Image (cartoon, rainbow, N blue to C red; front, side, top):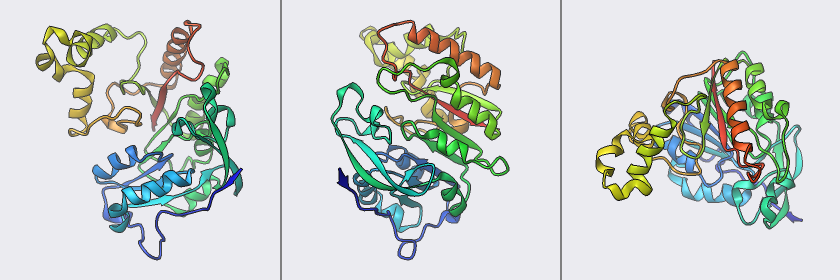
Length: 304
């Protein structure tokens, strides 16, 4: 087991965080390589980024040195846990996206992995120390629920996104377990929901009457049907182009959380509509018995 030194992105006495100077506040819980943080900074928001992996946190400090210096970004190198402690954290050597407190997640697909010791804190302590953000993005491989659990119904972030589920290799979630995150969001005080595909950032619907039309347009614009040379004509109607226009030309990066809040396509659903959509799409996905148990790749977005 390797021991990791706790490091903070910026000393508040040296380069203080100045969120009041910017458009609003976003928490990026699970900064990873900084793709989402870079997007939020470019939109003019002040960002509090949390990253458990010391090497990724250090890389973020180097990458975003200017944003830290101007008080727009504060990076915390810590894990989110049930209590303040020195915790065992698992690094996935083959795919850092799967770094987790759960060794079953860090070792998916037989990936090489190793453990380190890191400092961890309950999310409620972070909320007590820093102001409630306009948007809370959470992506921490199996521990998202810890952040949702610690939210105060009286002071909720206006928007939130979390992984819909995070199964280990070979783990099959039953209906109750698969709906756990949606149920927790409702219990926290959220009433409107969007289920967003992380493949293309579309908002899921069921029944989806336009699914085939979107696939044809996207294929003609960027995929196999590009041989028809219709790209310049249809590209503006593609999902990617529509999302980029809605978000002021902001580019979409595969592997990022993507657009948020009112930058998402589609309408907000009630809890019951969201629940039914989720279960039907999930049933369709896992009707393929060869599907990976962790590959149902959707995020819940919610607002009140």
